[in-house]
Image (cartoon, rainbow, N blue to C red; front, side, top):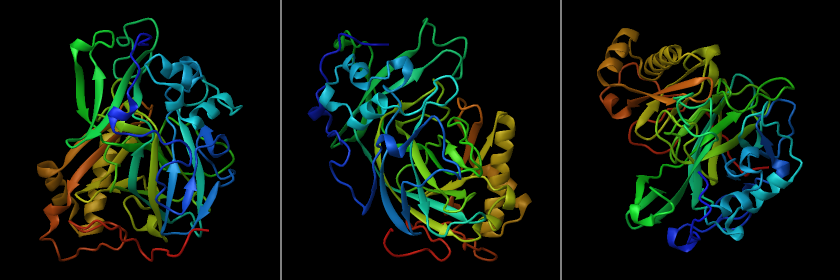
Length: 405
């Protein structure tokens, strides 16, 4: 709900500076700002789109992402005016967010999704049948505030919440200090004595994907084989997402930045706010034929600790089944484990969670502990990019090298 009487937000006290376009640390030689010319709104790239940059496999790039919060039409399409209600001064609103809102960037609030997507970026030599590995190296908050939004007809309880006539916007702030990073929501913005809810920050990009074939840009909300709006909270710093390349050059893109999300994302959005992302993109030639599902391959991921199978479907039960099948395929492909033994192991030790239930196509992801396989040697193969337990470096087949071009 708008808090028109909110006191001014003390930016310095949060410990997070505001990172305007091109300002602050840019830790790679390739930088893609979120200017209106580099952004799609509510749609994802397709084969017909022109890349905003081109890099070689193995390159590291830094991409600015902008949250849609404060930019959307039902928030006034004026981020400076919207966030002023919550005590944020105009100088602390991102210039690129305001430029996008003020531009003629096409967006139909009824036909398009909400997300602002930076890209696409072409990867030299990428072809259909390859796998693209995106490793998240750094995620830096660009502002120390954001929103959780709930709108009628969406979320886990449509028709029940929001209980108010209009959408409900909950302001949250991000803080960092000796105790780590945390988010904060005031219990009653008009009465500071009521205190606040405090929770850990776990930044990640809700949208990472590759372009689809053809000349039609897909809607930004439902995820699919192209990746897109996966909303898997494990895809933070250190995680690698594997996507089947579908068009020449892959045409990878980034968006929907989150500061924190509970599995399920039940309200509609989570704590959403703009991030600066630094990633490494690597190519696994022919990898799609060697990975789970072969030609049916869907996205999957890993972290230092876990293999992360992903299942996607409009029906949550089918999404769960697809996630289990992906998990079985990972264990068979990477460790040479019989399918029945793999199923028994998953029942005894695998964890599965609902990624989100708000994107039309629902998501389920699993967590398979790599350390559980440290004694497995016979029949094990790790030639496709999966990291052995305890290592931090992605190891794709024939990774590219050299500077970006």
